Length: 134
Image (cartoon, rainbow, N blue to C red; front, top):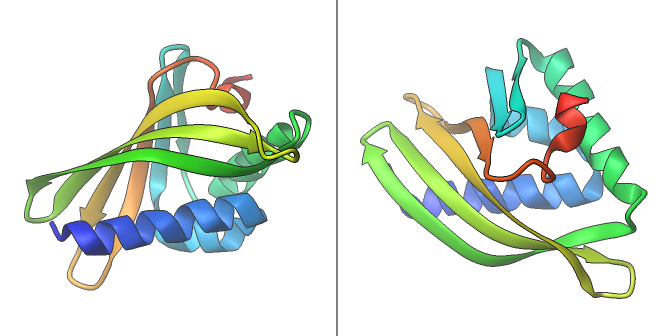
């Protein structure tokens, strides 16, 4: 799997997440889509589920003053010609420009003939995507 194309797709995703552009996020993801954390797994069966799920997660971050993410480290692994993972170490940043949360997540990518898509996220703690599991 192509590392540069995958990193470019991830950067599009994080920019859309910060802007609350849920339709752009849905365009970058394939359904069914999964989000898994130590507290459980959520499956988004179709585009509407995905739009609602990302909206709930992103809107909940506004309560903390979230304005963006600082990407500390991106570790790409090509698993096969058609699959790859991206381990993301990040900080959430508030309106003052200060980091207030540190997290890690593993994004799963798959390539078909035309495009690369995000097919799931494995969150490595209970707090990063907790609103998906409420």
